[in-house]
Image 1 (cartoon, rainbow, N blue to C red):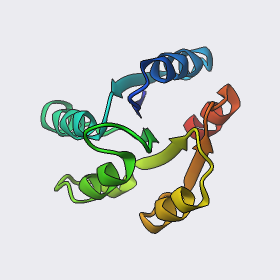
Image 2: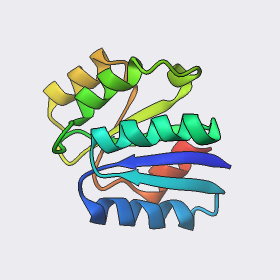
Image 3: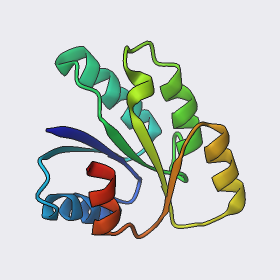
Length: 126
């Protein structure tokens, strides 16, 4: 079973994506965080208690407390084995070229514009 972490301050986005993931029928454990700080805490908890990092993180850019870019920088410095194997997918309601360029600078290869589709999710999970 794959672990997926949804990081977005929009609870509706998290709910809709949770439902879309469940509709794929692919066995997935879904966790959510409302900002980057919560996500870092949750990742530390994954490792400490279950030793199972999320395989995929769907990450919003604009969030309070810690935005997506700050999250990526903090995440990359976590002293956890296998951290580089986690696929981070940047998700935004904006297709701002500056955001895309910054994501690429941080090593993000996949950038999706909201709303993401069930087909997008299926592609990410298979």
